Image 1 (tube, helix red, strand yellow):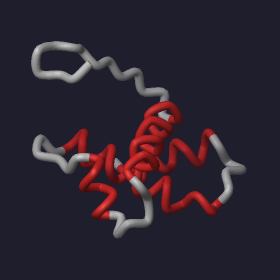
Image 2 (spheres, one colour):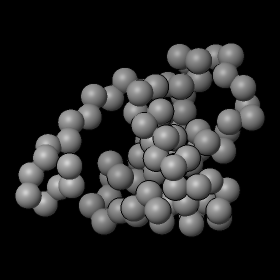
Image 3 (cartoon, helix red, strand yellow):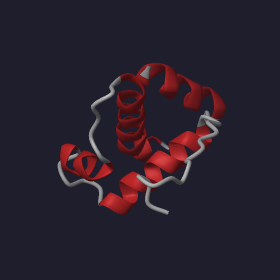
Image 4 (tube, one colour):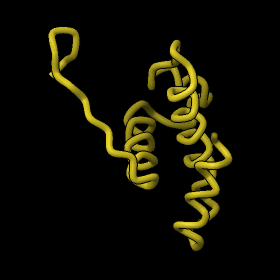
Length: 84
């Protein structure tokens, strides 16, 4: 799943700089984990898994960017258990 996501990105953005490879890998791995596993890390824990390379706001932004790059349409319903 991770490799497929990275292949899609490479095909869509062939001139993307390699300097963002850490961003791409972490965000692809994070999304693949969230899709595959019911019990997943929070984004705060992903910043720890990344050994402090990224702050929480960067992890959140990388996740949003990756979903946008993959053209995923995500809907979040607001309910009694969700924070608005």
